[in-house]
Length: 109
Image 1 (cartoon, one colour):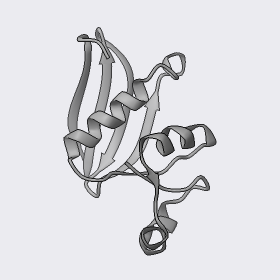
Image 2: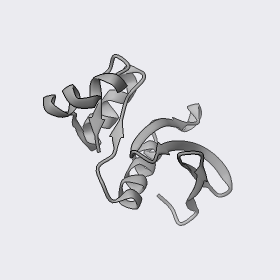
Image 3: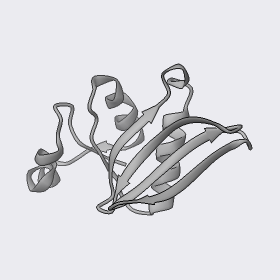
């Protein structure tokens, strides 16, 4: 990303909102719970496929410093999450992943 790319982090309820901007234009955001679960990741439609989602996920992962759990809510997200992390293993999934799964698996980044 360029020097004009910025990520802001704001406390919101029981987690944080990370907002990605480029030259003052908001490109997307992610919400992260205090339990280190990325609850939502959205990139503006016309900015998808340009690496902004990857950048934001990597930024959050470095900021948190621990494994993050992310749950895709559509098939398009699966390849991104699989590329950046791994599918949750069976033991983790049996313990709590099943409760998060929206039909596309659960990933750890």
